[in-house]
Image (cartoon, rainbow, N blue to C red; front, side):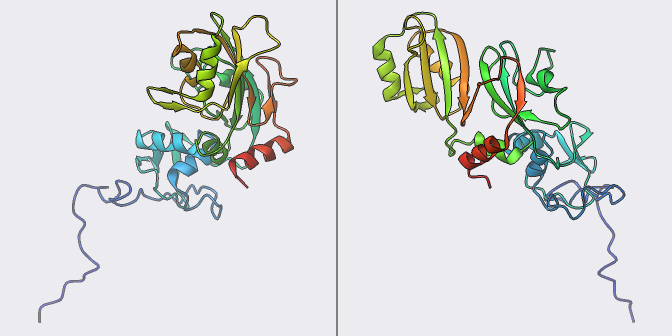
Length: 283
């Protein structure tokens, strides 16, 4: 009688390692010799969320990093943000092993001019991380962006969930800017901005805009809004032919510049952290 083939003893086909090319074609090989926080809440977490919890960036930015091939799991590039991190997985970002931050930290900076709002700059320019690097041992990142010439309030944290929500348009994070323009602002333009204008990337809803009473002349304007699109304040005034000479964010989600000189950083108080989480609905 012919011997029946054993269905559990089939030869693997394809090139070595072809069965573990990432999500959809097998999972990256587990490396049990170097386990990452076993039995922690990070296990089974989506890869983009895991990266955010490591204090690298927000969850949305982490998804982009994953898709761009900057994240590896067990030395293999995984481009699927929804890959589930499991016990024993070794996750690396730009070839550096990362692990979730246990302690969440929150810092408020009064950003100076000519400083880049990025974690690093390949042209060697000064970044906000150069200001904070000797003040905190945890890996933190800036929440949102202020362009190089813009000064004022900037939050830095390793809380990826909070950062994600603060930058999401569905949450009402109020921001106030003081703007100094190259010439007096026409009252009709103030009314038009207050009513609502539309730029090439959509409408610009503004909560309030008005002249600053404590400034001489009428080249100084205060504008309050919740949206955070790229260079939105500058583009709003450029729409009417003005050039913004100075732009300063003086209010961010209940935080102000009180007792925080330009170029300085301070940790948030417990009540301020609670306030920010309340605004974003984060428990």
